[in-house]
Length: 196
Image 1 (cartoon, helix red, strand yellow):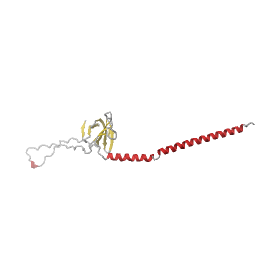
Image 2 (spheres, rainbow, N blue to C red):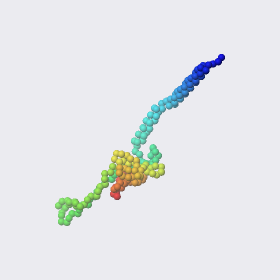
Image 3 (cartoon, one colour):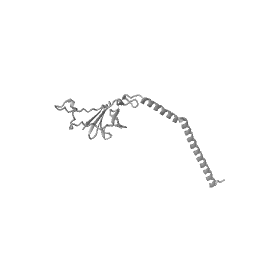
Image 4 (cartoon, rainbow, N blue to C red):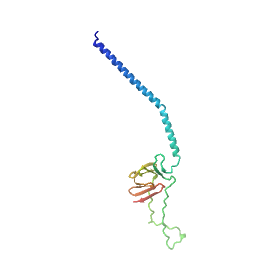
């Protein structure tokens, strides 16, 4: 008995279709098995992650409620010096020299008029900059944290704070300068201003 080529092609097509169907079923079954295993191992993962974040926020809030005196930072392990929060820049008073009274006038005659040629020294400009912290890295380099008005900046030597360039950062103070003056700020809250 001779098999026709048409019957042979039909049997071959049927075997290919059966093989393809088995392959699709095998891939689909393997995918579903892998998904089910993954779900079994990560079930509740999202809730565990949320709980961990909540615990961290609570711990950080508790830590932030205590005053940090400076020294080794418990979060990074690096040395950090913090400005004294009670330190206020010393008030500057300008001493004036009164003109001596002329001979022949009595004290009862009244106060002496100030000399119109005498001028008070120029007061330094209003300063919005304040040093809040200095952080030392593992290599002895220092980074300063300064407030420029309401804005907090992390600066290194060469950075700009407004129109002032940072020229020096040490473990206790920071020096900045602009075209007309040099400014030095320390961790105790003191500021010095020197015209160039």
